[in-house]
Image (cartoon, rainbow, N blue to C red; front, side, top):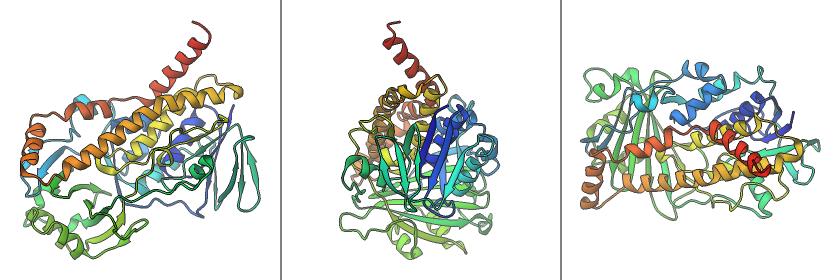
Length: 413
């Protein structure tokens, strides 16, 4: 049994804790906040993520809170359907593991349901003040010191651990992208509304417009999550985390878009929040040279939400770790195991990040000719292979196979 310390008890930290504890290892998670909370509202999970939830035995609990979409559409800013994508109900892609939408807090709660079964210890109100990469060990702000065989940093895009590993501060940066989110009570939408047809069944809908895009989908069975990602440009006021915003500010960004979007905004009880989207400088390596510390999740590869892959990529980290450490890994082999983890995960995470940026640019085209070319490609289904590449991936199998291949190569088999 290997002892593991994880810094950060968000989705990434909890997922890796589940994967490693299920593999038979002793896991302790440190969270600086006094209580667990997930910022944000809705989140989409594609089959490459829900396949892992199945592996960890928590998918049934997740599905108690989740919605499964029956359709997806890409639309022009005026509402014309350009393609029935993403293929959220295509049985070729979702028959073994579903595509779901869920509130982030409900997903966190469902992940926590596996904590006791696997003996995961969570220490709340435990701020990490220092990391000794040689032992390895953590020193908390209280002075307490914890040693283990390896440490994983899951402390998000503003990771202090990443800065400690690099030996310098490494804050995320803002290229000028912002998020507006409007939470719309669906009980306020009736058959008299033009938005009724879009609301009466569970669906994921995208509107592509100049400078940004809107996506809408249901969460918590009684709420529509409507999100605008918009490029406001350099010099935009930086906002850390969701803050209340004026609905009219949201409306001004889409003033000449599909009337259905404005109808959503007008539903009584709708609430608007806004925050800055950050990016990180891709680290050249995720593992410390001493081989017993690694970055995971947003600390390693924070990406924009334009392909709905942020949480999925954190889960893939956990899946690969679980695939490796479910096999025999002696304590002295941990540096090798973490190098294999990085070799498996870093190229794919980097490619997902690149494709996410491409998707963001595609959604926000301003030139009419370029929009027409994009729409023709979408109408021809040219994006299906992208979703196939993303969603059919099995991180646990990939991790297991990579470790076996490493051992065989080392042993000359």
